[in-house]
Image (cartoon, rainbow, N blue to C red; front, side, top):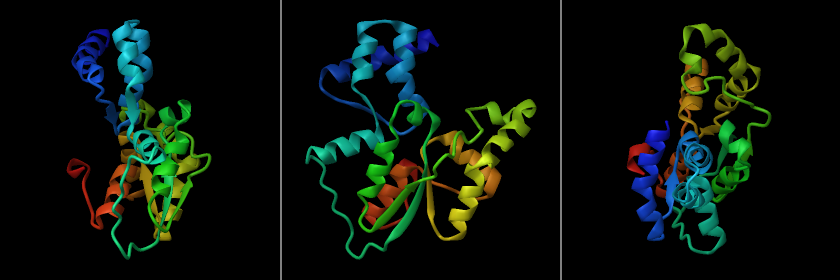
Length: 198
């Protein structure tokens, strides 16, 4: 892990020194750069990269608040209701507000957090391991999975930033949820999009 962290920091530090921010869409990966690499490497270069690494939602909201983000929304955008599951790492790093604010920039959108949803239960590969499967499902069924079933039954779009979260939701409910940035882009461009298009 330390070797990979050092490799990544060495690759990214020159960009950061040029004023180019590092922006990520997967919460666990962004958290590695902002928190865990600091402990693994204990270097000035790791601190530099950490200070200039942002969650996608955080980056866009800050640009919006600074008046540096032009969002040419499609006219006649239908009103949409969204429920957002916040990734555990984003909760731990006090990033909840950024996801909700970013989704709230969509015109005529109603955005709510799936309150008290806790962890989806997947936790990376944890839920895929046979010995943890039952525990993983029980964690998801505590709040998140029933909330997703209820929301999707009412035509509400559900957003989840974590790859593991989206897999757990799909496996546990049959509902395919999207990353918040995909839903944001779909509202912006007026069509369905895949993450690889953004």
